[in-house]
Amino acid sequence: MKLYDQLIRFVELKLGPFAGKIGCQRHVTALRDGFLVAMPFVVVGSFILILSNPPFAENTTNAFGRTWLDFIAKHRSVITLPWSMSMGIMSLFVSMGVAYSLARSYKMDAIGAAALSLMTFLLIAAPDKGGALPMLYMGGTGIFTALISAYYSVELTRFLARHNITLRMPEQVPPAIEASFSLLIPVLFIFMTAYPLSLLVQGSFGMPVPSAVMALFEPLVLASNSLPAIIAAVMLSQLLWFSGIHGSNIVVGILSPVFLTNIAINASAYAAGQPVPNLFTQPFLDFYIAIGGSGATLSLAILMSFSRTVHLRSIGRMSLLPGIFQINEPVIFGTPIVMNATFFLPFVFVPIINATVAYIVTSAGLVAKAIAVTPWTTPAVIGSAWGAGWMISSSVLTVFLIILDLVLYYPFFRVFEKQTF
Image 1 (cartoon, helix red, strand yellow):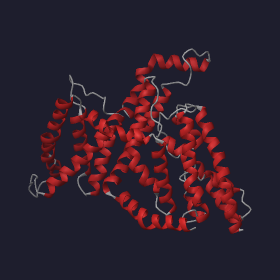
Image 2 (cartoon, one colour):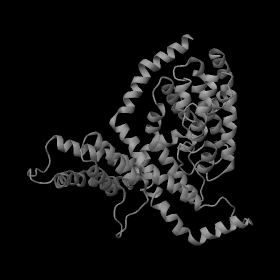
Image 3 (cartoon, helix red, strand yellow):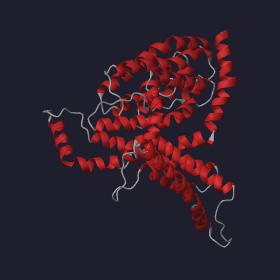
Image 4 (cartoon, one colour):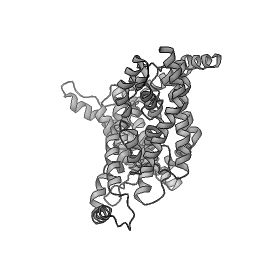
């Protein structure tokens, strides 16, 4: 227990406060909230992508499959347009959402900040070509550029305002008009800084800014698909949860750019009929690692539902339905699991074991990698198949992991049951 006490003390006194400060930091909060703005468009775009790629072989003789394939072949451009206008331009939504959230935290004009961020992004990522805006970098490959555009435009506007570099309007001018004119100077400074930088990067390196930014962040994206990186992220989240801090909000918030970049690259590869490259995505985390919520507690809720102790049986049955939909606050705080030494090992390490098993199986090609984003409240058995393009093998893996989690949680559940009997 000495090692356990030292670890808990470290989490409480060092890791927890530090993570709490990171989670409350305005730029991290803006990152998380900004990606929530893009999420509905990504989910709908993902659904359209799956709809336009039927899970049937081209030479299938199945009547339903044949009809679906023929219909898609005839109307593909019409059907895939919503995907292009949602998931295909997700960086636009991210740019506006992050800037809006950050500006609001500074009590600035949030709408104006979102518009300025969008202009900044388009200026460096989608230069006009023959009267048309290229969409090459409006999807997942422009995510990091969109973030930089949002942060830069808001912080530049704030810097100018703090140093009184702005247009002064008479008091009689309505606030809406004053806010509009206050953006003139920031717009001018964006043109004087971001645009020349874009031209410099293109002239010096022969690539647009988004390509250069992706080249800089490529090691991070590649590292995110490694098992050590996945385990580190999961362990950090679980340790924070165990100490009473919402670890998922912090870890997933920071990983959101990587998740969206990975899923967008996967979706584009899938749509083009190419191998899907990225493993670590939001569906991988939600439906393989955190089945039933952080700590993979769906299995624990199932065990508690059949407990001989009335108290635990009541908590288990009350927590079972929310757990199916990936909501596990009832079992975490009702048991409780937070700061409960009996459940420390399974709560922290069962998700890590899930991650390891899923990583091995997915890397071996036995289960498809995710190509679509699904709502995190989707039941895991359904969500895993949905995210992988309705591959039944993904649901089979999820069911296997639930059974494995039952086995792993069982001895600790029995110990706790005896303690409360």
